[in-house]
Length: 397
Image (cartoon, rainbow, N blue to C red; front, side, top):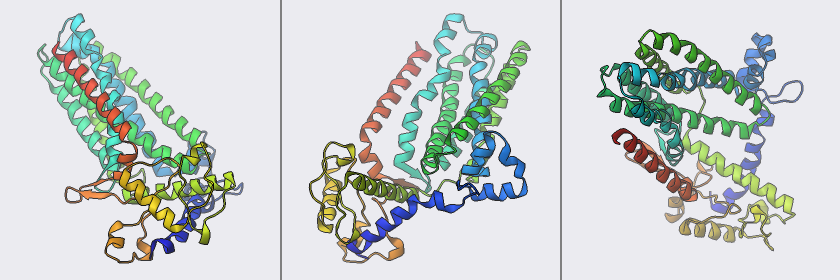
């Protein structure tokens, strides 16, 4: 399939992809109902009337809502609040450090949350085992739980304080990774189906608040009894157990290549809507064009439509230069097919710039994401270096 032949199919697929949420399943009032929710409501109609939870399940499905709520309850709610709340008891009572040193080390318990932006950009840029979030969250839960366990097992002496701070930082970083990657996943779902979005966020924070309350009730008696390390063991177990949701992919995350293609189709549909809003003429033969000069930003509108040859040339120029405005759309099939003079089968048309496999296929580099957001990558690296420098200064000062 040539580029010209693929263009009408791209536009058709883009319109179809945008209409999926509305046409997938609908209730009597025309609202979208997730297939899992439809099956659940048929068996247990009362679930639909549960405040917040019922609306969230209706829009996003039972598995995802249960997994999101449980991971926030156990990981960000109970486990994180235990780790933060028992810092005083562990440092002062168990390790016996002085107050001045405690004041310097106590802030380390929250530093792991300061570098989660770096994790988000790293995961979006390099998919691991075909997924941008799933296996990163799995590793974060297992690794964070292991670091918390080692922290609780350290000897009860003053020399353990510095090492303990390093493990607190790593464990809290694991929780922050799960938090930011979960946010990235459900924000994509909310873009596709925005109506139940407020219920989803409310459900998540309800679980976090319940977890924080449980952690507070648990911390006090154990700290008063002189056994704060028991709380740390509970925190480690709860953080590690959440990996089950990601092992079985209860979030329902799609493969990286599918998501990249969907993003390209979404941009294509948004560009088409923008052209219609601006009253621009359609491109000949129903194909999509590339808009130059930031038309999507409202700076100025192009004075003419582009032919297929102009579109293909603009796309390749943008790829070669590594620069693209928001109004320019890259819809590129595999370049190798064109270089070798081969045609791409209809079922193998890929929308957007395909990821590049590396390290024997363990990772996929999303070069388009990296090149488009390189400034955010640089900012995340600088911020991470600053946090690590502050961490070392606090421990070694």
